[in-house]
Amino acid sequence: MDGTSARRGADDDPAAAMFELIEQLYPICRSITGDGLRRSLGIIGQELPLELREVPTGTPLFDWIVPREWNVRDAYIATLDGRRVVDFAQCNLHLLQYSTPLDRVVEHAELLSHLHTLPETPDWIPYRTSYYSENWGFCLSQRQADQLSDAAYRVVIDTTLAPGHLSYGELVLPGAREEEVLLSCHVCHPSLANDNLSGIAIAVALARRLMAVKRRFTYRFLFIPGTIGSLAWLAANEARVPRVKYGLVLSCLGDSAPMTYKASRRGDAAIDRIAAHVLRQSGAPHRLLPFIPYGYDERQYCSPGFDMPVGCLMRSPNGTFPEYHTSADNLDFIRRDALAHSLEMLERIVAVIEGDGVFLNLSPKGEPQLGKRGLYRPIGGQKEAGGFDGMALLWVLSLADGKHSLLDTAERAGMPFAAIRAAADALIEKGLLAPARQDSA
Image (tube, rainbow, N blue to C red; front, side):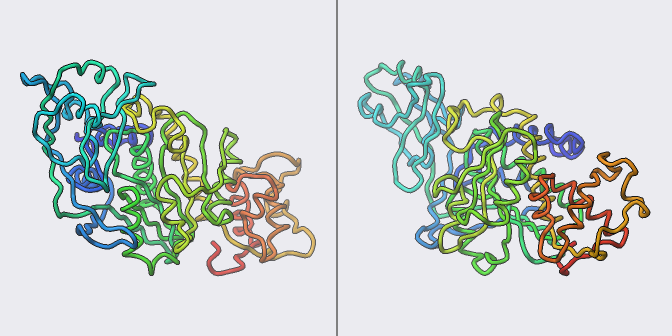
């Protein structure tokens, strides 16, 4: 059985399935363009019916231009007798991303000016890029750098920078309505497990689950290189932007920190309310952060010209944990229980998106008698079989006036949305509640 088949057979253990996908993607050298990116999208495409989009080099994207495609065959620093002391084949973080080709002997002083280390964590290798300015360089541990004492070294960077394409993956799951939920994650980092593979794995797991159920909204999943990928999608889909009613960027979802939600630029979008409600009601530690114009692709979706309702769901925000953008963000850093919990929180958010609506109490003059309909137990305070208690029923009936949504009700009652939705479903079944609008279900 291949890895994909094993994952498909592990739907009853989502954490294991997500971790296996992360393991498969981890060794690949990804960048904002190139064969490593396409190979990664191909692996994701074994899990989902992904559409591969290719945008040619030189295509204008607002104030940006699609850069040349970058590919790596080999890269190393060697002593003059041929012994490799820094080797891209051993760790793909060793090469400065988008390094230009080079094959020559480099004096020690010049070499030092092209090396990147982390003196405060001398065993870690940093991840560095030079996407939009031509340069070359290597990233290595401080301990490795301290051992480079020869007068000169041979430096080989066997890369190509040539006209090609920017690649990204897109999956659309149509729903009953054309209005969309956007889920976006970046796929451009090499061997970094939390940033970015955790977001990819959770997006895949959610998409697979949504494919198996009836959907009210249309769901659009984007697997894109950071910044330039979201700009490419926006440039090609400006007419679709108004259809997006809810959006989330997924990142850094596999570490041990509490769940964190960063609000959209609007600050009061529906997705902001929903994410805050779900995290507050989860009973687990969490953080709610205001929007700042720094981070991941939410800053492109939320730029003033688009102002989309897109927040960012994560555990540790980018740049806030020591392992960020280093070799320590490896397979040992992420936790399976954290992946499972992140997926659960995301699924709860989606459940609110799918289940919210505005309803009418069909017996609004006084309380309807619930006991004769089998909805109320003789002794109050006991949870009903449907997963709600009598107070959830009463709250729904009280606020079902055609003005308040179920999310309004859950927030005012201080109850989980799932309990309010279950109560609403029971009332609908007994003929006591009906949608106030056609789009409420």
